[in-house]
Length: 155
Image 1 (cartoon, helix red, strand yellow):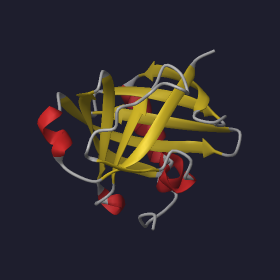
Image 2: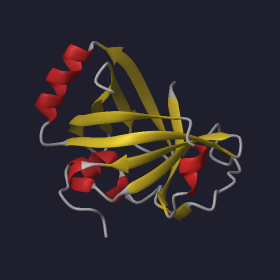
Image 3: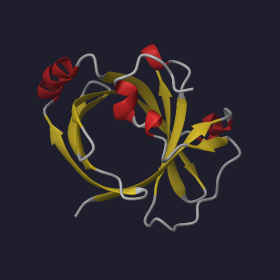
């Protein structure tokens, strides 16, 4: 079974910018989201796209299945997902032997910056960089599906 083991944090500084190796503009829309599963479509730089199915979280682990789809299909699905579409620039930042993804949100969530790190196991030790703030892994207000349904930033 495909699994995602992930921790999520608020970002409290810009120190990550000096470590960034690449970035991409992401648009992601939520076609369905409930307590059992989420269906998301995502375009990357408007030239690549995937559809993702995620199961309910058990701790910091959940099932995740992701498949490439034609960009034209993704554009149509993103239109179907409106208004539950997020825009963000994802920055790839290596630190402490792991790959951190720093999401700088745009549009109605401008000002929100989140860091995610995927792990091999739930008990994996993670060296936290000094630009990491509060952990929000278990705060569903910071789930992208929740953000897509909100016009304001979490407080």
